[in-house]
Image (tube, rainbow over all chains, first blue to last red; front, side):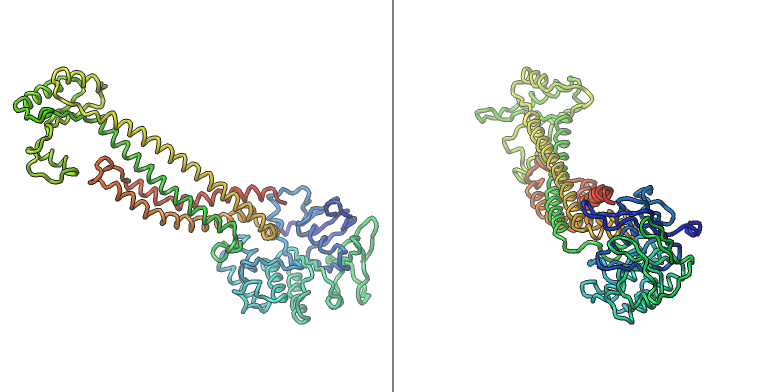
Length: 253
Length: 298
C-alpha cells in the first residue's frame, strides 16, 4: 500500500486557512506539497504559525478552509475510524515533549509500538537499542519528572522515530540539547530520511539550517514565504524539493 | 500491551481512589444482602416443603385439669389414624415413638431417656400427597368433630405469615442490590468521566500516535477494574466476620426454625464471585463510558 502511494505527495496543502475560534487567521492560504523522502525546515519568528502548520499535518487541527491530502488521502473525506492508521505513519516530536508522567523512559518510547500491537520481546529489543543510541540507556527506568529538559527531548525524539514513520514532524527538536547532541539527532533524522521518511522540522536554529542546507518553508504572520538559502546555494529542483503554489506567494526554489 | 508494565493514568488519582472506596462499601453491603437473601430463599423453600408435605396432630395424654386420660388416648389415636387413612391426599400416618419424640424435643429438653414420663401429647406425623389438593380447614373440622380431644397443629398458619415476612425481606434485599448496582454504575461513570477530563492531554497524545478508541478505553477500564477489584476484595473480607456472627446466631441446634438458613455450595460459589463480578462490572461500565466519550472527540 505504501509503495503504491509513493508517487503521490506525502503532504499536500491546497489553499489552507486556519483560525482558532473567532480569532484572526493564523495560517493564510497555505499551499504546498512535499514529496516522499523530502526534508524541509519550517522557519519563522515566534507566533508565525510554525506549530499550527505542523498541527495540521499531524491531524490535531482541522483547517478552517482549504484541502489537505496526507499520503494521497483527502482528510476532509476520511472517516474517524480510519484516522488511527494514518496517524501511525506520522511521528511527532512536540516542542513541549508531551511525555506521559506515569510511564518511565522505556514505556514512553515503547508507546507507539504497543499501540501498533507489536510483541513485547521485539519492543524491548528496539527500544533498548534506540535508547542506547540517544544516550539514555541508564535512564531506562526513570520517570520524566526526574529527567532534564535535554533528556526529555531525547525521549520525545526516540518515541517519534521508534516505529520508523513515513512522515516525521519535529517542533524545535534540538531546543534543549547541546550542539553535539543536536548534531547527533539531526544525523539520526538524516538516516531516517535516507530510508524514505519525509521530514519536516520546525526550528529557530540557524546553525542547523545552514549546516544541513535543506529547503525551508518560511512562515511570516501565517503566510508561507520563500527564504533564500543561507549560503545562497542554488537548490536544484528535485524530488526532495517542495512545490510551492500560492495565490499570494508563488515562488521558486 | 502497556498493561504489562505501567498504567497510563497517574497512580494516585483521586477519582480512582474514590472508586476503590465505593466498591469496597458496595461489595460489603452486596455480600451481606445476597447472603441474607439466599439464606432466606433456602429457609422459605424449606418451610414451604414442610407445610405442603406434612402435618402434625397432637393427642393429649392429660386432661386440661392435669389428670391422665388413660385408655382414651389409645382410642383417640386409633380413631384418628383410621379417619386420616380414609381421607384422599393423606399418604401415611405414623405415631412418633419415644426415640423420635426424644430427638424432636432434644433442642428444648436435651437428651431425655424417659420421655414417656413427661406430660407430652402423643404425636401423629401425617405425610401428605402434594399432587392432590388438600383443604387443611376441612381436615381440622372433621377431626375435631370425630375426635374432639385432638389438636391439629396450626403452625401452617403462622408459618405462612413468616414466609410472607421473609419474602418481603427478600424483595427488600433485591431492591437494595438493584440500588447498589445503580450506585456502582454511577460511580464508575463519574470516575471515568472525571478521569477522562483530567487525562485529556494524554488521550490527545494517544490519539495522535494512532491509538484506537478501544485501546484507550481498555486502558481506562482495566485501571478501573484493578481499582474496583482491590476495593471489592477488601469489602468482601470485611463482610465475612459479619456473616460468621450471623450464622452463629442462627445455630440450627438452638434455633430449629432456622436450621435450613445456610447456603448451598453453589450459592457459596456465587458469593465468592461477587468481588470479581463487581470488578468486571466496573470494567465494562468504564469501557463503554470512555468509548462513548472518545467517540465525540476529534
